[in-house]
Length: 311
Image (cartoon, rainbow, N blue to C red; front, side, top):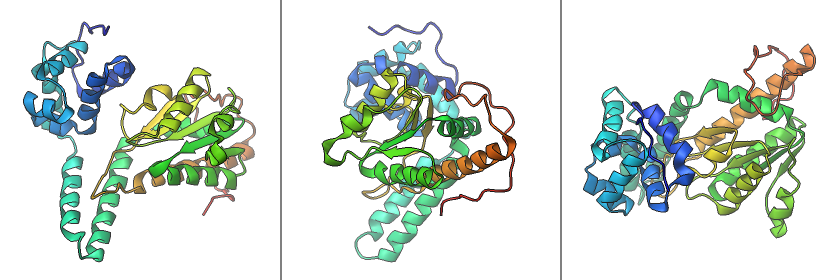
């Protein structure tokens, strides 16, 4: 049974954090509402109870119950937090994506050059948004986790596979011990079983989330193996099971989602890791680089000699 919070979150950031912390304890219907709210908070701010209920496939009374789980008196009080975020100037990111989606649908039938332009514009928008969404401290912690790990295991399937493959490629180029969990020969359980507490698992998955990836991340979490996640929502099943979680906003246009933003994030992590490793080697060992990533970062080491940057 869900325990009602005594004090509801007063701003969107705290409410989003509450959604993430409580997500696993929610019923399937309530999880559906949380995903809807986090996927498009601007839209939820302007919708009626009936509209949200129809889109999420629940009864209006379920929305009231959802709000009460987080300490609100009802759905309207919770919705006011989303409206305040909108009034205070939240980015119109989704509106821009919708605009690109509509243009692409119009051009998709007979204009390949227009498709290229709209995909390029949508990708550029996603990369620009990435700069605002990704936390600097989280990037530093992720780099230290990769550097400190005995071995890094990377998993991503379907649309996330190119991102996982690039991470494995970059780590290998930098001569870190790395294993891509590719499930060749149906051996994924055996591949994942090699993970140890001194290793690091990087899990990449976007909605609809690949169940094998979710299972491997969940198993690693239970075994206390550090997890670095790249996903598309705080409601993702990867988020609560990770030590560091990067949320890259969804930019679906037409039938496919551009991969520019998660690939840029992956490349940035690899290049930053190369610089960090090079500076560490020049300046001596860093005994305080604990893999758990929870120790406050000391000053980032500096060096101009990075000789192993992957292409």
